[in-house]
Each structure stands twice: as C-alpha cells, then as structure tokens.
Length: 172
Image (tube, rainbow, N blue to C red; front, side, top):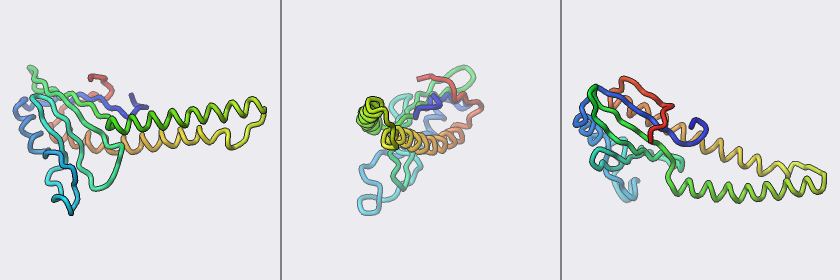
C-alpha cells in the first residue's frame, strides 16, 4: 500500500495493555468543533479523539489546514511477550469521497479529450491536461498524507516504546 494514502502498522512493546491505555489517554484530548482562539483554548495535548474499550480513534492536532491529515484507528491486544498495537491510518471519508468525485469528473474529461484527439488524428497540449491534473492530485494527496503520517508514526513509536515495527504488514 505504498502508493495509496493508507498505512497499516503493527507495533510491539513490552508495556502492559493497561500501561499502553494509560499512556494513550494522557496523550489525547476530546475532539472539539473549533480549535482556535475565538472559540476555545489551544490544544494541551498533541492528539484528539477517543478510546473505546481496547481500541482508539485519534488524529494529530495541527495549527494549519491539511485535508489529507490521517485519521488513526487502532486496536490494543495483550500477548505473552507484551502488547501489540495494530494501527491503521487513512484519510477522512469525506476527503476520499471528494477525491473520487473529482477523479471521476477529470477522468470523463480526459477520455473526451483523448477521443477527440484520436478521431481528429491531431493531438495538442489540451489533450494531456486531464492527465496532468490527475498526476497533480495524486502528488498533492500523497505528499500531504505521508508528511503527516510519518510524524504520527514517530509519535506513536515514542509513546509506546516500540521494540519492533512492521510497516509493510496489512493487518486491518
């Protein structure tokens, strides 16, 4: 999944499940509708979200706008050697829906331009504009997502005192 804005991770730690839950709860605060000076005070913790049983749903609190900010979900499981934390990072569902809608529209336009070029046997710069738009959206999406997901991965590794990671493992 290296070419998609999705990350599936598995963290192993020597900490107990209760210790992991305790650390995580100290690291997140409840979600707020507004996070700027006029409507509420600034964030006191680096993440916002909730813990439900042995699972969590969080995202980083940032002071700027990034529509591609990963939504982080995870499951905490105890085992004989410590604790396993399975984490999935993906974009917000509305951002995914908008991108799909946008890709559909640009894809239809791209096929129309390509059909026009083939039927007239003349290709111009305009024929390839939709392809450029698709490549630009892909680069923008991946850069925005990977920038934030790498920061979150470092934070989670430090928080859980990770002894091994397996970022290529599709767990969830």
